[in-house]
Amino acid sequence: MTKNLILLGLPGAGKGTQAEKIIADYPMVHISTGDIFRANMKEETELGQKAKAFMDAGNLVPDEITNAMVADRLAQSDVVENGFMLDGYPRNEEQAKFLDQFLADRNDKVSATLYFQVPDQVLVDRLMNRGRADDTKDVIAHRLEVNKKANLPLVDYYENHGVLHTIDGNGELDRIYSDVKTVLDALD
Ligand code: AMP
Image (cartoon, rainbow, N blue to C red; front, top):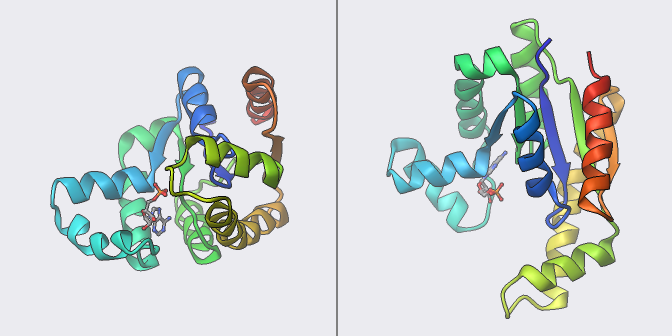
């Protein structure tokens, strides 16, 4: 069976690093909606033009546009054959429901959602270290709060659907990845 994964975690939780490790060992196709939007903006495609104003303002691109783009990507043969690892999508419950319905229509489902959990203070420290000089502690703390509000309903959603796996994202990269592998290898 192919595996379909979703990665969840606040900024600084280490999703990107773990995504690279997963992709090196497993066949799933890594799909980052932010990357697809950025590529379309660069190429000045119609999708890129539609998304630009929202992205420039730091807002979410409307679900209608985002869901259509994701559906398009998930229908491609590499994803159908190898499964997917979604990063940056879903961002709200409407998108999560859309994804479930889209997959159900082709007799498929989300296999697991990996939620990388890291204490707030560690996230603030990490973001301070990698952020811009004008990223003050308060601004970073605010960004985390905003993201938390958006993330927690999804954590609940996938928990209620029985596919949530919480990974302790604080500590040694190798230990975190070994916990990820334990989850992935136990999926059928
Ligand atoms: P990211 O790189 O994931 O932070 O995404 C960058 C920007 O792309 C976001 O600020 C949104 O404007 C847009 N975007 C990415 N993923 C989504 C999504 N699932 N729903 C709506 N907008 C998105």
